[in-house]
Length: 238
Length: 238
DNA sequence: TCTCGACCGAGAGCACTGCTCTCCAATGTA
DNA sequence: TACATTGGAGAGCAGTGCTCTCGGTCGAGA
Image (tube, rainbow over all chains, first blue to last red; front, side, top):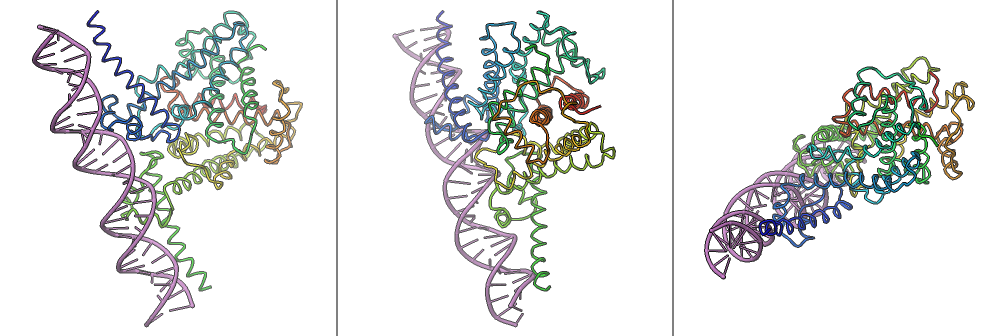
């Protein structure tokens, strides 16, 4: 017991410091974007800038930590909203809940959203640690599709006919994605779900990166319409 | 005449220098991203860093110039590809041409693409000069819709029924957009066209910003499928 | 309980950045 | 040809990421 406790004292202090650094970094992020200043963070914490290097080997390392946190945060936001829908068979409601949760998180944390959905930091190669948190967003959508298929409301017959034919190599990849997400659906449905998600994040990018300034002011209604149209594209019953 | 010629000598030299600076900046952009270095550009041109300030008041000013150029370049790429389609009544072909041109330009100039579609540079407010070039991308799509409506192939009856109902305030805004683009179509069609474009740029963001690494390798086929599905969403006849 | 070693903070320093200011040479203009 | 506008050079300021060395502190194992 002593060993564990003793070790965890230092570890806990260290973890707290890491947390404080990340908090300050997130604050910086809001005003400075991806080119946040380590020295400014150190100043804010009342610490020499060199001290930060005891916790993060480089600025990129700190950014990586923030990126992983952001992926997990937006993923968790979607998961919680989806889990809160009690009518589990109302796939539409679950889809809308996820979409709105994503948008809500993005609007509440625009800088962190930009960190993961914006231009990659030049010369920065995303480490492998980021791929799992990054795919987390898609998992929750997969559960909706899976439940729908199992319940029969997303039966192959009920979904729209596969209109643009999918070439074989692409079909193989789409099948692999579905298998990795543990859903057994035809490639056409996988494609439509992916497209729906792509559209949503495209919409969020447009909204957050200022592409629809002076174009659409009622962003809430516009996003809502897109969410519903994408629900139709997937084939979610209403 | 002497006055004009004399003035234009200086002006021409100045324009050439500006061009050289922008060329070097674009080269920098490819490796360094948005945080390119003025001093590195100066070094590359064999010039003192302070000399650059005779041409651009600040780094942000230079970035603004690059942004405007990028908007115009991708816009023009779309326009040229669309204009090259001789079968003017084949709306589908025109749409595909535009989409592929956008993607081709993006793949050829990823850094410039990121400059206009990625996270906004922190603390950088896009000047008014950028809004016109930014909307240029949408103009070419508008012409396709307009021609389709005029030719009757995009007749209201032929387009899918307006399924998600559009709330009145949003409908007003969509009508305003259509009016600004000089197309006379119902709000539902405007919405679908906007969504199609949103999805395409969402797809390009995913592809260029690395979101579909380890997911889909056959990017060409995947983009193609998305383009065709969005053509269906708009209601372009095939 | 006590000593020792891991850990961590401080500070100086390097090479770099954007930007300003002053000085000066070149060059088109009248 | 003399002048005034233009643009380049260079020093300098405040800031950056990052490294290295030096000490102190405090939890660790004996």
